[in-house]
Every structure is written in structure tokens, then in C-alpha cells.
Length: 163
Image (cartoon, rainbow, N blue to C red; front, side, top):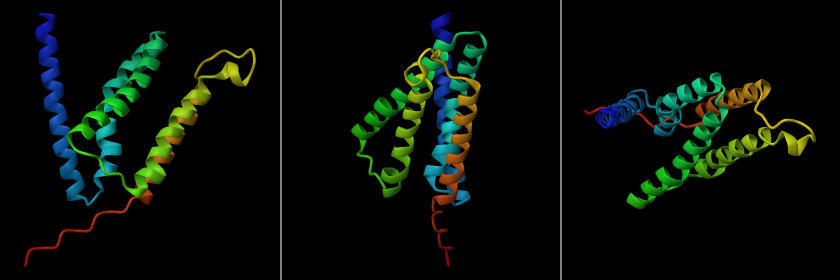
């Protein structure tokens, strides 16, 4: 019975992912929003919401290792496996904004995570933990990154009307 529920759940996730992808592409086209912005916002938040729920419930239950493992594992999976498989299917061209802005922000996020989890290295005797102030800083940085990215990404040109 558990295997059947797992298969049904995976099928529903696949159907939902397909619906999310098609709907996101339609939103991007309709509102002339770059697909990168849609991927960074709607798709990223939509696909990460289950991870957020698992991590929040785990942290609330005192299982912080599950929350940290979920975040780190998800990022490793996204960077290595998803990008790797996509590049195997078709090479992924990088734009100047990917190279100058997006990849450095991704690296900075990893370095910030390293910094907030290395309290003992920075201040002798401190407990290694991610505290509320760290959380506030990380949420604020995410909001700032979204604002900056949306403000600096150029909108695609409107398609010419058929004459």
C-alpha cells in the first residue's frame, strides 16, 4: 500500500510540475516578464514550498538536522544533478548577467551559510547555530536579491501585432 501511495504521490508531483512549468511560461509571455525572473520567483518558490514546509516542521519539532540537510541536499541536487542532466541533454548557454550577477550571488549565499554556521571559528566558545538574527539577515538578503534582480532584468520586447 505504501508503494502505491508513493507512486501516486510521484505522479501528482510530476503533473503539478508540468502544470507549474506551462503556467509560468504563459505568465512570462503574457506579462512580458523574462523567463529568468519567472524561474527565480514563481517556479523556485513553487517547487521549494514543500521543502520549506518540511524544514519548518522539522525545526519546530527540534529536528534541525533535517532542516539543514534538506537545504544543503536540495542545493547540491539542484546545482550538480539538475544542471548536469540539463547540460547533458543540451548545452546551457550563459549570459553576461548569469556570469556577473547570478552565479556570484549563488556563491555568496553558500559563503553566508558557511559564515552563519561557523560561530565557533569566528568567536571562540560560541555554539555553532543559526540564530534568529541570522534568519532575519538571510530573509532580508533574499528579499533584496529578488528586488534587485527584478529591477535590473530587462523585459523582452512585445511581439509585433499581426497586420
